[in-house]
Length: 284
Image 1 (cartoon, rainbow, N blue to C red):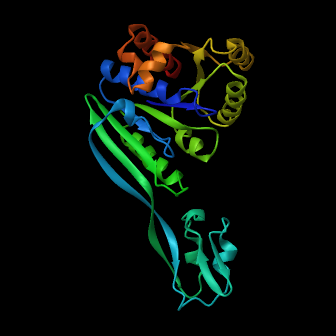
Image 2 (cartoon, helix red, strand yellow; image 1 turned 90 degrees about the vertical axis):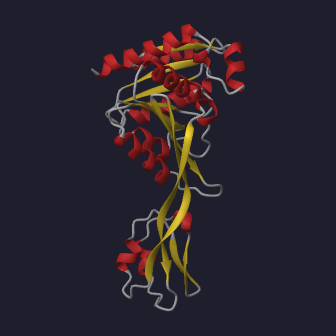
Image 3 (cartoon, rainbow, N blue to C red; image 1 turned 60 degrees about the horizontal axis):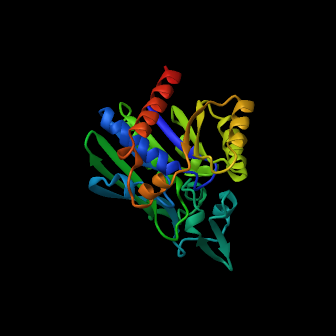
């Protein structure tokens, strides 16, 4: 079972929910795994603290042009839809971070002047806990190609198909989010009772309507703003509002110290287990 925890914007409590849900499930079930797909700023490890971590380098293939062979015909430039390769002042240039590794330039080159080389974009770390696995992607500083890292994480949770997989998706509604949720069984949307929270919840709901995947909402920091903003939206859109997490100094204190609130509150443990059982029933 693959459950993604997503949000239309950053800072709503997506990592708070996903790490605590993982923490509760791994203590109640065997074979649970957590995947931090927020590869631009992964922080799940700060709360989960995995053991025996192994790092895997993620490379992509990009073109390298042999200038001694190149006849400056421009066919590589014509086929590239991302402007990743071009001829400037009679010399070929490759813009690594624009390349999508489609290999089109290599295929159309009439003199075989283009070959592929490896280009590092980031890493994926894997680790273990009791009854559980941990995976986290991290984009290298200065790099922009997040999708190859997320695709590697996706392969891990497909390999662990018999696990309960909790996917901490990136915030927003852009390509990294799509890559994280397009093959999951269920999406939990975390939002907050503010106009910003409502606006961005609306955006990600519109995105998910294009996928054949069920979803529901968890309202974090309940009581901070106007709960009715989110409640009215969910009622209008016929979206289940499964859980309200209160705006609480106690929660903030535990979270800011790197703790998991589910280790401190039996009520919160029960809420998360009930959330999981509700999701199971909907998927049955």
